[in-house]
Length: 256
Image (tube, rainbow, N blue to C red; front, side):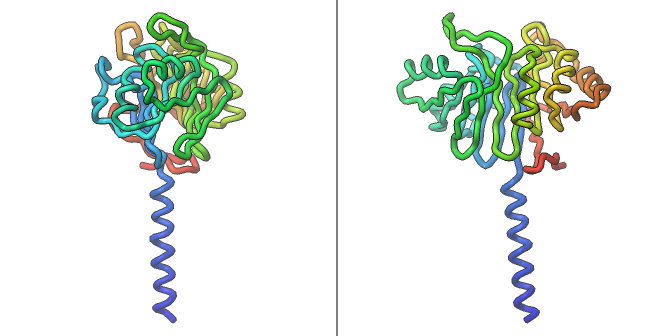
């Protein structure tokens, strides 16, 4: 009988550890607005690597099932097509940009979504939310820019390039992302002060600054952003290090 119970305990122990392992979410910053997300399905967002002075990887290093592009500017579209082709990855982007890219690359499997629209790719839900910016591809209109909410139970909000927009309250109220990735570089997007204000609308447990210090025009201090958010008490800021994975469990707890 004791042998039987020991077997049950062993099976339970390994089952719980397997579930814990499967539920781990990994998030890695590659500089600028590029992040790899591992939810079992491997996702890369705004893969600007060639020409990104802080990128720790090359396009040929990327292993991805899904590529997400928030808008058509070259520092976000970046190496998306090369990565899709090398990995047979599926692309998720704004409808007009998806059409334009598919026209030039007839092999591309593109999911063309629009604001408040969602698609499920490789088991992961990806929703488009408003961003306040611009977007063009080869000098032509490429649809509006978007932010994205990625995930099923655990959700990450990548704001893309954006200024403050009241719709961020909807992102917080409806999608309830546990982690938000917000631009703080100013000039083309929110600066630290505006982004800190935005955290009060979104109310994610964790916020990670992005889109700063890549070029002189977007120099910003992430520690200033962290202090401003702490004063508001609206989120906990994680200042990501390029190439270092940050991990969470599905409840939203950061794993050390």
